[in-house]
Image (cartoon, rainbow, N blue to C red; front, top):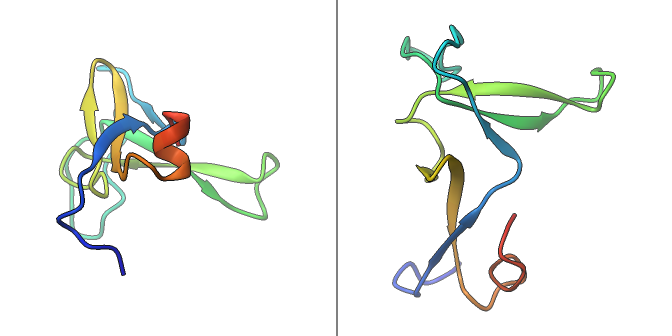
Amino acid sequence: MANMTTERIWIEDRNWRLLGKDSVSHCRMKGCHELAVAEVARHHSRAIAGFTWWAYCSEHLYGRHIVDGKVEVAVVPDSPFGQRGYV
């Protein structure tokens, strides 16, 4: 398991997309009724595209945050994602 005190950098997570201000989607987290701010592409074998979009509010972005109109995730700088600059 990774040491949580390891330095991290924030990079764009391209599996996520922001929702527009006029969106009426709600967070998928059980018991949460907040409006969603972003969606993540989740693998789904029955979907024609192979994935479906799942919406989440700002409190349930799985450790991600939104900066300059992009969803970002913290990674170790010398990891493959850190070196590439995006997920």
